[in-house]
Amino acid sequence: MNFSLKRSLTFTIILGIFASCSTSTEEPWSIEGKSDQEVMAIADSLAKTFIMVDGHVDLPYRMNIKGFMITKTVEDVSVETTGNFDFPKSKRGGLDAPFMSIYIPAGYQETGGAKNFADSLIDMVSRLPVTFPTMFAMANTPADIEVNFDQGLISLPMGMENGAPIEDDINNVKYFFDRGIRYITLTHSKDNQISDSSYDTLNTWNGISPFGEQVIAEMNKWGIMVDISHVTDSAAFDALRLTKAPVIASHSSCRRFTPEFERNMPDTLIYALAENGGVIHINFGSTFLSKESRDKFDKMREDLTNYRAENGLSSDDSVYTAYANQYAIDNDVYEDVQKVADHIDHVVSLVGIDYVAFGSDYDGVGDSLPKGLKDVSTYPNLLNELLKRGYTPKEIEKICYKNTFRVWRKVQEVAQGLQ
Image (cartoon, rainbow, N blue to C red):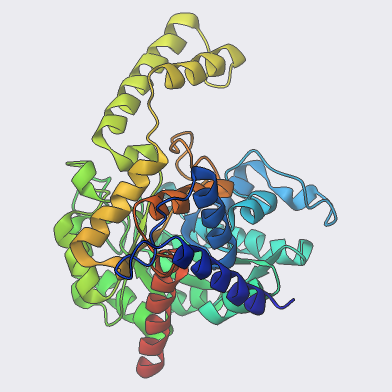
């Protein structure tokens, strides 16, 4: 059966389930009377029925460091990795289009070679569909993702995390567009030639640099989404002022829950992002989700450093890793799926359902993922929590992909007008 038809039929069945459990015409999506198992089954069906986009998955850098399924046979589709993302996990969780993060460490800004390193990661991602043609496909547009979804393939759109590979050549913006890059996070952990970083203290440009202004204009021209994750507040507001198209935050959360953590977005910036028509993709890392978890992780890092020093252990020693794992459990350092939903609730309460999406940072936040969302197979747990909070299937569909597609298509439209 064609996947589009199957999706339509499944959605009709889901709507019928909700309608049958409605207690009034004013609450047509009530799950009152449904058991936890029944609601979870609906959540799992929604995850498989809707296209699921994740704004940020750090598989490419993990492949560079540890490898991936590239050495396995095409037929062995059951093979799972130790990472947060792979084909079997994605199929179980319903993830259809994880944006592959072409992550460029800030060190390349000092030593050079950022462009070459970006190319090497793009090459690795591009080989996956060639090696596993029954699993993966590249995707440069929302339409590509829809076609791939109909064929049962996981799409691999790409975003570049850190604009350093543009170097000092504005023509490299078009170069990376041609290579398949569809968003660029303006900087990462250090100020670069484009923008100030929220993790740095220099404030080199007090926002966006003069060259960065040209970069944003060129991104608008060619249809690359401007990503304001990682930048300072000043740089984010500059980007919103400069852009002619909606922007995204590919993997950020709400500063309301993490005061003084500039990497997350304050309410004022969320309002401005919505006015621009953009979308914030919520990061799942526990330290992005609450001050309590950030404080616990800070203490854990200090205590574990002392433990290693006192016992003469390395960070990869089995005795140490066992101790560290137990420490994390005993001290309850991880947030949970409910806290991710709290961030979604907060954005919706501020600006509405049209401006929030998922940007997990899977494979990028290390061992800090919340309980219930440890890898991409667990996405139904988050949809289950949203259902229990009263979100309708149509609202969940917007969060899963429609909000991101709206921005992406508008960026394409603006580019066509500028070329």
